[in-house]
Length: 117
Length: 109
Image (cartoon, rainbow over all chains, first blue to last red; front, side, top):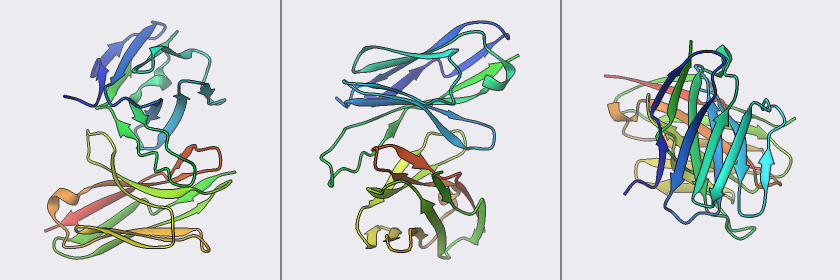
């Protein structure tokens, strides 16, 4: 069984469209994340979300909105897509540990390659 | 601001040993992690250091010096399959993982 899964794997769409990427984890983790990886391979955290709190990165445009129907799912909705949104988007999850002993290892999904034309 | 510095690219020969360095400047520190990412793949966890010293896992070792805000990943007996990008990441005082820009490891036969 896949630990962290994302759909779709590839997404090609026109500028101005609205699209969603789905993510599911079956690890029982409390925290989930969305990352954007650009062509230069830089991994940028966009959001992290756990049972208690959604943490929004202030540099993320409000066209991006995470939605979590339950703690096993964190979907990413993008409005009014722009050329600069083209990237690979990774979902990840981790199990919060005890302070001082936590590793918070993150488990990544396979990624969604988004191409905006 | 918070930052992690690691070389953008390292080249080594198959069978050799290579060290990838990482220096960090973060608000608080809980630990240094290393992740591996092959082209077209997802990052996968390699190691974690919370305390000073060397952690060994097979051919890979990771070192941390908190007083120097420095760590490294050591890869021994390099194999072609080790060609990948390697990211260091630090957990800061807000339990957020701050990522380096990644080091592309090129291995030549």
